[in-house]
Image 1 (cartoon, rainbow, N blue to C red):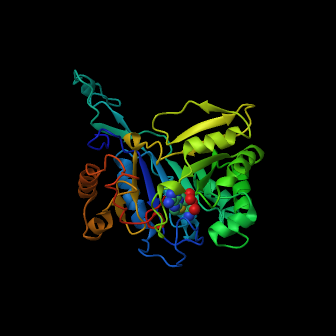
Image 2 (tube, rainbow, N blue to C red; image 1 turned 90 degrees about the vertical axis):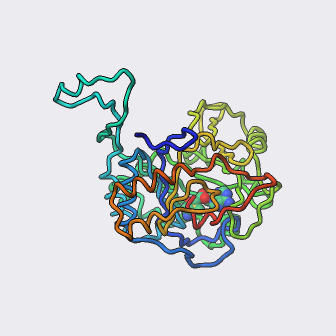
Image 3 (tube, protein in one colour; image 1 turned 45 degrees about the vertical axis):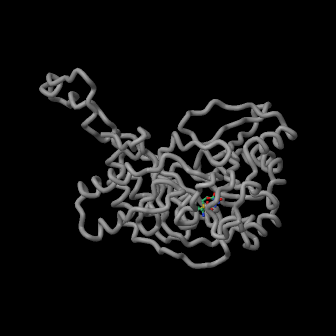
Amino acid sequence: MPLTDKFGRPITDLRISITDRCNYRCVYCRTGNEGALYGDLPFEDYLHMARVLVGMGVTKIRLTGGEPLLRRGVVEFVRELAQLRPQGLKPASFSIGNGAAESRALSKPNFAASFDSGEPLDIALTTNGHLLADLAQPLKAAGLTRVTVSMDAVDPDRFARITRVANGYDHVLAGIRAARRAGLWPLKVNCVLMRGFNEDQIIPFGMFAREEGVTVRFIEFMPLEEGRTWSPTTVVTLDEILARMAEYRPLVEIPHARSETARRYRFDDGVGEIGIIAPVSHPFCGHCSRIRITSDGKIRTCLFSVWDHDLHAQMRRGASDEELEDFIRGVIQKKEERHHIGEPDFVPASRTMVHIGG
Ligand code: SAM
């Protein structure tokens, strides 16, 4: 059976945080501490979890953190993940090389049987890009499909003030260019906009998208920060971003799949693409296909969950893969219908973004 939650949403997209350490201390994310709070697991354990979940219908894995490129062995881990093959689902009446099963044809399709689809797993990475320049090519060779680099200003001084790291900008730009050379494509650059910090970077990012040939995606700031500085007025909304960018050049919306989180636009002359991820002003929870595994092996069914589910504890007690599957199916049924950002009954998530994995 496909992995589906109680609202009928297929769960195909897994994010694994492989560390909650980070070498950046972005003002909108962290209070400035250095250390990991929850720690991480050996790669074999993440691989085991990924294998079980891919066997249950996950087709896309994104590695995140913390900063995932801080983990030694990440290239080898990607190579191991790339051996996994997503499962296709076929009617139980279908068989290979044996007509007997076909004769059991059912009046209704029965997608009970899964098989190796032969398709490669989609393996993506979200990184701050600081260490990407040297790792882009080895990661691509190991089987990484795509990379998203987080970058919140195109002005180097502003970048340093946001990340609280001197000279980071040059490293990140070198990382973006190395990823492009390595063929990690499509290459996305994510920018979280926060009022008072970087909303003046909207047009410069439009220029950057055109010059560097990357898709720049603006993300609305969500209440997931360590410092609890979020308020509705700190959010630079989709409408505001569009209005500002239109002062630079007209935009044309690109049709997008309902399951895509980003609204996509190209400039009127066809050069450059931007996207806007607007979970606050235009929530997309109804199409959410994601679950997350934290660096310490807990499943989170929503960024805004107030609890998590200890998959690693099940593994430690020696659960079989079938038992892990049962546990995961039970957890998926608890996936929240939607977030409650900005509503009077909003309860902050039990972890902040750096300890979940964005
Ligand atoms: N270190 C990696 C990076 O910088 O991409 C991966 C982890 S980071 C937590 C993942 C993404 O979450 C980044 O793009 C970051 O900008 C974004 N992010 C962090 N806090 C956020 C918040 N409160 N609202 C929206 N996005 C946030």
